[in-house]
Figure (cartoon, rainbow, N blue to C red):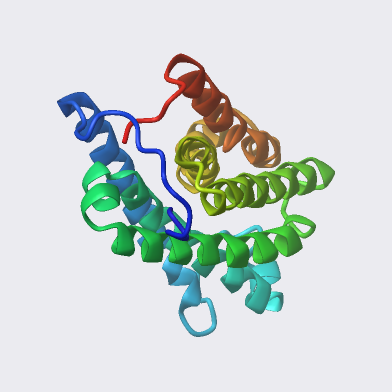
Length: 217
């Protein structure tokens, strides 16, 4: 997500990915794209369908909710392309513009998400879980922006990995919830998923960064 080219950039790492990494990227990108497209059904006039326990709240606070949905969908769909080695090295201008759109999506998604977190189904547990997700989402992305403005590509990539791990909570929430809801009362399941959607993602990102301290080029 290079936002400027005014400072010299320190490029490190390989210029191509191994096949296994490409496969992982493709799976993540397809999942992200599917959830981003699915979430846009909330933009239909009158919001005729959606999460039953929250649909009335979504309609009552439609502006804030849709701000979160649209911003999150943009970040979710565009984020994977920021990691492509070829895009960064061969099309840096496109990489920067994609990064600007990703950042814009996260700003919009965070503003809407923080507002909606206080109205989330499940009470204080989910209010806190989703609220901390929104704050962490914005903070990691802000750190990525700060690093690239300073010309520090290595730390920019590290923070972008953390940022997208949190963006991907939109996917992992939907992977966790069906199983939890089948085993537990729905309110309990939703309280758990408000934390499980993002904390394991962030832990996984930290483990990855610990054992691969310099992200690939």
